[in-house]
Amino acid sequence: MPPRRRPRIPVLLLGLFTATVSAAELTVSAAASLGDAFTEIAEHFEAAHPEHEVRLNLGGSGALLQQIRAGAPVDVFAAADGETMDRAAAEGLIEARQRHDIARNTLVLAVPADADAMPTGLAALAGPHIRRIAIGQPDAVPAGRYARDALQAAHLWEALAPRLVPAQNVRQALDYLARGEVDAAFVYATDLALPSRGVKRAFDVPLEAPIRYPIAPVAESREPEVARAFVGFVRSADGQAVLRRHGFLAP
Image 1 (tube, helix red, strand yellow):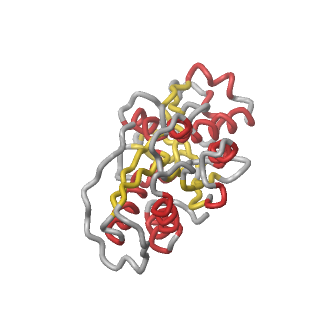
Image 2 (tube, helix red, strand yellow):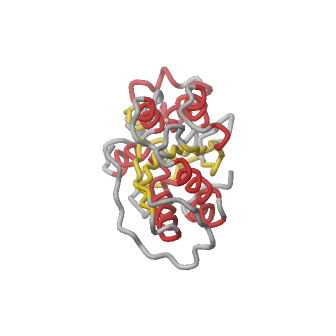
Image 3 (cartoon, helix red, strand yellow):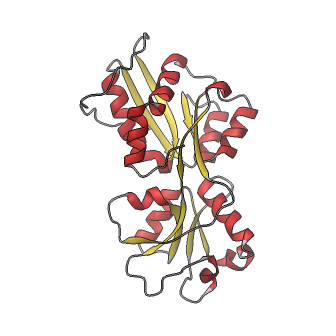
């Protein structure tokens, strides 16, 4: 996915956050579910640092890692799971000592707002009313991996496999549901905090461990000081306030 440019929007009362570096263009690769929150955070960061420009590159965490591995000019990486960041650290692709968790999330099953039957648990997905279920590709999308793990724990993965519709990221899974192309979708609670799209939360998906979002500067960043400054800004009171407004839980 090509980096997304945004218009600069003035922001008041940004707090004191300075960096003695020259002007830079920073590329931040972030999980698709962070898109709206990071768009606002980037605007705040640019307002506090008008000499810098932030370009967002959004997508599935696994696909973003592949881009970094292939040498894409990325400065900061924010993933939707610790496993993907663990792989990045093991390969020396990030500054491991600058890695931090910045938020938590919840996996939910969403259905159309006018659904006739409301599933109340994973077992209900095997019923006749749910024929097609959108899920992020488990090998590349953390939300899909979380959903697969939950279905496997419930001994439903093989039975439901024919009904699963893979998506490139969690927002695509939500789009499938909003367009009526599927009967249900595994998405994050924060996705349902977006403006109404004719979908609703059916139930929270049980998981063995919480969903955490780590962030780190990329080891081969062209702008390491600015990359660290951006990570620090996301962790600051201003950055955390933005994440809370978008429905993310404290790390």
